[in-house]
Amino acid sequence: MPAAIRPDPDCGGAADGAAPAPLLAFPPRPLRWLFLDLNSYFASVEQQLNPALRGKPVLVAPVDVDTTVAIAASVEAKRYGISTGTPVWEAKQKCRDLLIVPAQHERYVAFHEAILAEVWRHIPVTLVCSIDEVACRLLDNENSPEAAVALAQRIKAGIRANVGECLTSSVGIAPNRLLAKLASDLQKPDGLVVMTADQLPQRLFGLKLRDIAGIGAKMERRLAQEGILDIRQLCERRPRDAGSAWGGVNGDRLWYLLHGVDLPEKPSQTRSIGHSHVLSPQKRGIAPARLTARRLALKAASRLRRKDYRARLLVLHGKFEDDKSNWRTSIRLPATQDSFVVLHALEKLFARLVEAGRARPGGFRLRMIGVTLAEMEGVEGEQGSLFAALDPDDPLARETRTLALSRAMDRINERFGRNAVSVGPLHGGRIDGVGTRIAFGRIPEISEFHE
Image (spheres, rainbow, N blue to C red):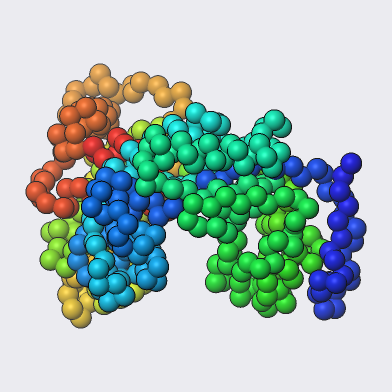
């Protein structure tokens, strides 16, 4: 039978001036999701690879310089108040015994794949949420609290035994994926928390609005303007009122999720492919910035081909040393996945960047540069070119030849390693390896480390 739930009048009732929330009937809300979050993942991998780092405060940084920031901190380092985004110089002040290690992104991807393989030994992986987070849907014979807890314990033990003893994880089990993620955050490190329907939404009232994925500073201010200062006040609204306060249907959706309803996932679509890179202080002039932009464009074009997309827009963006805002320009492309077409368009954009940089008081000093391919469309039912048999120097045949060359370069680099062949000069340093980094929400494929 559907469960009838009304907000508890003793917990504050409806918001001031609002009518009491009506009696609502919910469908059954069994435990449906197991969410696994690896603890201090990058730092834990480093400790697994190097026993000398185990049990010690470790900070993972892009490079070992004080001007950069932490991209990960070990459990031991977090006890000193060090976390992702902490400047290295500040972290060293907080912990004199701190050990700084440069990031090894390729190793993190390799461990990620080993962890996925281990999870699959126990339960199918429904969704890979990030490099260190996976979500698994529970079947009817797996969703009693006892069975779900036993399953989680087997997964956690399997990762430690078969992937690495330093790789602990926190697991949340709940009626939907959002709540399972929230549950995994309640007990770290090495936690296991079950959140059942009869505990909802009251068990969430101790959390902050910002703890919910999708609520940032801007949304928090918007909700505050609508009289919603915490999760309790959001849940006490009618679903429609919650949606109005949010500013759209997502608020309505969030209300039901917080009450334990397992709503269908919204389909996602790749809208753009891009890479960015922070230039070292010695490499912020025109020549190294151009080489870096070309390298980023080549990586983006290679990913475009691997995913069977074409792009119609190329965007070049960056940040100058004396300006926190983004500089940005773009150019239309013919629907293409050809590296040479992309590079030709990039030269036009880079000329604009040079002009803008030289006009600045301090001259051309670029701190960050990025390249994005956008307005993408799938390559479906591709036919051979009508112009392929023309004279090789004929303009109509040129893109057919250069696209074939781009694809051949992909295959060679995948087989023989990064930069086995390249377009244009190689710098011989860090610039040649830019772009292969793990970003929030995107995990590079192993092949990207060979581009």
